[in-house]
Length: 307
Image (cartoon, rainbow, N blue to C red; front, side, top):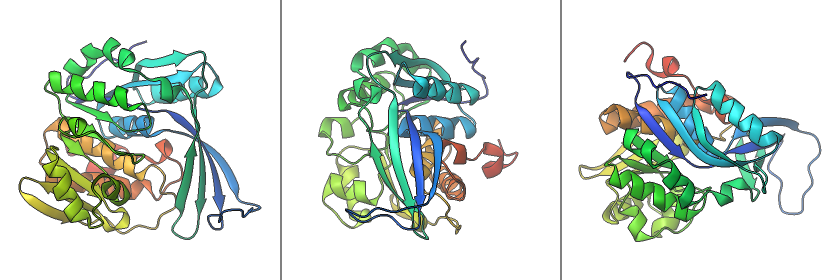
């Protein structure tokens, strides 16, 4: 069943991964060779692509999700979870010869920092062919979002389809990996964290990294700084935005929350400064709750009744 589009909502198209997060909370993150006993186990819907789709939907957008899943219980549960968020999953394709995505996550310490390992899965078989089959959706979108938990050739095809449709392309370059210059030139908004910005540029100073990324062809770069907020680098210069002070419970999915809300602001045509500030409020609220998708705030929590 297709979720009907609202003429009053922006349309966000998300290309990316879907995982089931198997989470173990520990007193501290284990060192190599160390075994920790105890801790609480929980299961959450996750995956950077699906997380950003949920964040965008709760931020007030109509969302179409393009991804791949296995023919298994994890995949069926993932699709059902997105449907409950009123996300269009017609292009969340089932791949019967591989398993659905699984992420193993350890949380520990007072700051609730995380370690994540992701298994090979249907996410790894998403291809340009799948993107081409959904090309009509690119013409209907106000923004296209992608990450790097799916094959790079699929991400590149998504960027090219967005460019051909004259739609802004937002790339969250995570997990970190080197990217071809041709892809960066197609990026409207790049949202790395400090580590990803360093890997992409070799610059340890986020401001210098942002300037270098801007010179590579991106229209604007927003570097997330965790509790320190975010750095915006564009043609106007470099501006720092503070994050609200909160007591973190679970930082998993905070960057995805930020990117999803940023995408909706871009789709709505908000000024980038207001968009970054709103995304920071949403991401800060998300870390006060457990889980990735389950922690994403709803629009009313961030903007109230403001349209």
